[in-house]
Image (tube, rainbow, N blue to C red):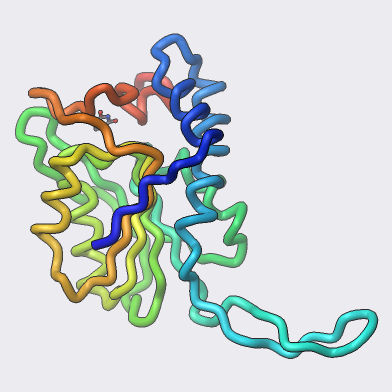
Length: 211
Ligand code: URA
């Protein structure tokens, strides 16, 4: 498993505004979107491309194009939805699948309540969007799901990670998965309620308001 913690002043600045408890939902959504686009630039560094002949106004040359099958972007409902536009801005031709996962706040166990994905993901590069890698249980379940459908190349894009969650993810997943985690920061720890410390609170609530 590769973990890329993106070291960039704009990432650090936007993340600090997200962490601030006084930041309103509307600003939070806007900054999360911008932050994901910055992370997406690194997350797509190994996206599959092939040479392609093109004609410029002046001559012909060999350029580069994304190959088929197109990448699959999978936001984890609900909070991952707040990351979708930020990623598809750079990958507008990607297909989008959905996984609905909910964690039990007491046991931290995860159950899948919705799924809209192709049955066969062989050969597809998958980009899984979930803002908070806390215990890792949601991403473990999501990556296992994608792996069962044939995905071998999975990049998880997160805003924050806890070290415990990263360790759990690496231990739980089949090493045959080519797994990358791209994040704006690896925080200190998880607290007894499963929140990332110092963190930014409940990402879903902060993006969408408490429902
Ligand atoms: N999910 C969140 O939204 N925040 C945390 O700190 C941990 C899990």
